[in-house]
Image 1 (cartoon, rainbow, N blue to C red):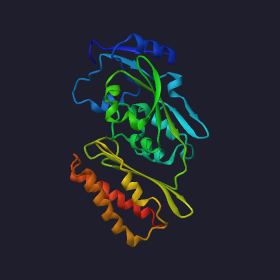
Image 2: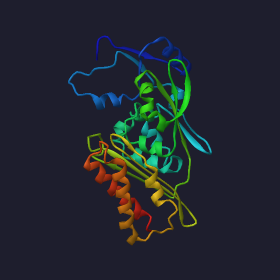
Image 3: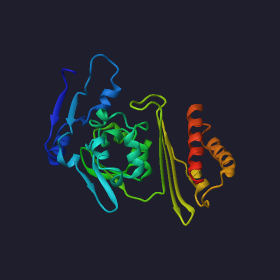
Image 4: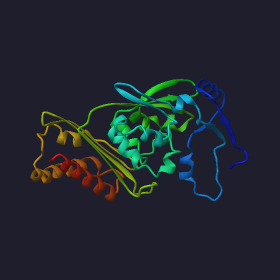
Length: 282
């Protein structure tokens, strides 16, 4: 620990707001698993000024409403999983179930999992797919914003300055298929880690809505991929998947060839697209 580090604690949201107004460049921490993940030296180095978010009742609360569930940002991942599959959106439950091991999940928090928008974290891509919103406190104000906008380059300045994620609001929506796949080793993040989300909603044997997202070092969310499947009659004929994949490859080439996606990323995405299509043949 750095000898010059100072650690502040607060008992409630009101004290948190006051502290943020009076302390410059404070770093909020809850489970601290992010620090452990990024530690590459024998000596553990902490930020200069730390705000501990644990044991603030408002930030650990979980509230379920008819149309959404709201997680305090300091709610541990294991606590969310203990709510059970019926009380958590399926795609999020699947993702958190493979987020490291139970010991880490008992420390890691939902807010910490999305702070600074790390695309390789388990919960981020599912939360974006579910159109989640987050409540943020800065030095001057409190406001809600879509999670996808928080992750966008346009919010880089916000992410680089002191702020606290207070709550995550996740809508409840019925999806016929919720398919999550995590690439890379389970338990820790490497260069191979990535998340893939496929959501499909059916009405009268018609695929009425589709969401496809892939996140590694960047987020892949292109409407053309979703439009390729939306409106198809179900079940899809297995013999038609080859033609659909050729269309997928054309879209991919037109969209991403000039980007910094590796050949490995491209192949993983195409394989997962094909796997998702086969889910629609049953």
